Length: 199
Image 1 (tube, rainbow, N blue to C red):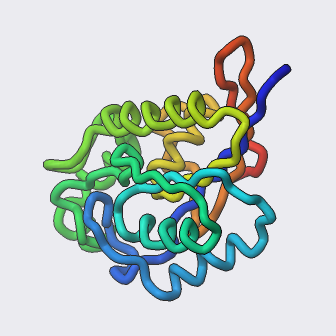
Image 2: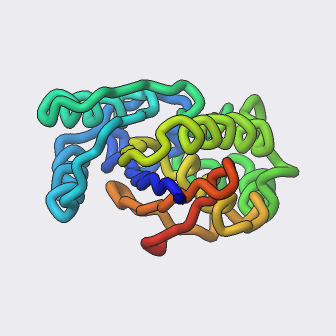
C-alpha cells in the first residue's frame, strides 16, 4: 500500500519593507501581509499535523500564531530561509539597475553563474533547500504538513518536482501568501512528489 503525504507550500505575505531584495534580512511581515495569509487559509479545509517554517519573522510570526490557534506542532528550519542577496539586500531592483545594471541582468538571465556580490551561490541554496525537502518528505510520511517559507525556497522545490533546471526558477511565479499543494507518495521506499495545484 502506498502512503500519501500532503505538503502545502505557503509563501509569507507582504512585508513592511516593500518590494526590495530582502533575502537573509529579517524584515517583519506587515499587517496587510498577515491578513493575506489568513485569507489564503480561509479557503483551505486542511487540518495540518505539523507546521515547518523558516525562522525569519515574516514566516515564523504567522506560523507560531497558526500553531497556537490550532494546537499544531511546529518546527523552525534554518534551511528554509530565503536566498541571501549579499550587497543587494535592502535595495529595489530599480536601485540596483542604476548602480550595476550588468550584474543584475546577468543574475536574472543565469542566476547560478552570476551570484550577487557577497551573496549566496544558487547551487548552495538549492542544496540546503532540497536537503530540508528530502528530510521532510521522508519523515512526515502519511501526514499533512504546512511549510511556511519564501518565494525562492518554493521555486527551488517546484523546480525539483517539475524537473526544471534551477536556472529557470525565476520563471515560476510565486505570489505573496500563495499556496501550492504537493502530494507525496512513497513508492518502493522512496518519496515521489506531484504538484496538485499549479503555481
